[in-house]
Length: 187
Image (cartoon, rainbow, N blue to C red):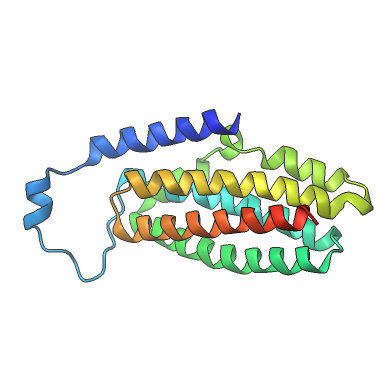
């Protein structure tokens, strides 16, 4: 189910980017602003989706910190919390800069249709104490793969250099996290 969802998100992001793209000649002759602050619809959509996704990640991580016992897992998820808390503040700030319509889109965005975080949270909360770390590794890995897929699509479709840069960092970070989660799960 995750692959069709990622394909759908990529199609939406790419389709929207095609509608918002400027002709190459205009982009080549226009001077770039010193600090880019413009956020297109496709960029605002990505930010809104990532805000919701990151909020869910932070919920998963908090339950893991509350219930988990493996020191290596706890260290990793504490790092995830620090990174994603910072990214969340950045994304919310950029949405505010984008204006009231972008903020409204972020507030009304329903992430449930393309994330299994609700089910993952339920699994994690219901896991017996001796299985919490294992369940967390599984749930968080699936969740972070989705984030990497979404970020990868934004890198290809986005129009804002700073949002694409953030998406690239998110893609690399989440991909590395998934590898670490798999390594911890294999021991």
